[in-house]
Image 1 (cartoon, rainbow, N blue to C red):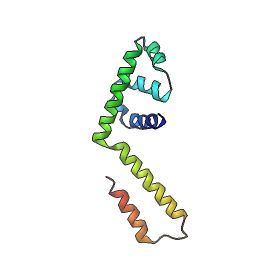
Image 2 (image 1 turned 180 degrees about the vertical axis):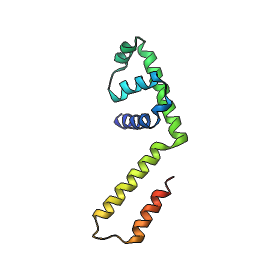
Image 3 (image 1 turned 135 degrees about the horizontal axis):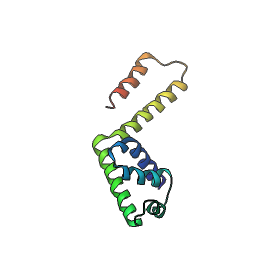
Image 4 (image 1 turned 45 degrees about the vertical axis):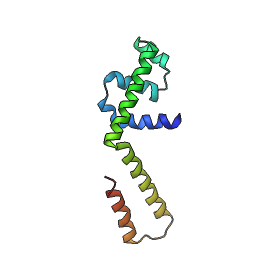
Length: 111
């Protein structure tokens, strides 16, 4: 569940501008503020089922956006590469120029 929550938070960060104000509110309350479905329903004076349906549809939309635009996946790849580069730099006294250029090329090729 934590993995899904983390993923949804990232997807929300990347794609929230594509959501309606109601979708944004529900997702913020549910995923960022940790409100229950019942608490959100009470806040908006709607049924718990309406909140559940809206959140599930919004999750699907976010996954579709990610499938098409791939922003989160590229973000993860960049972070992994940066982490690998930092570890390589820290583990050595010196890094040769060609090795550094290979890291840069890998970074450039992510797009």
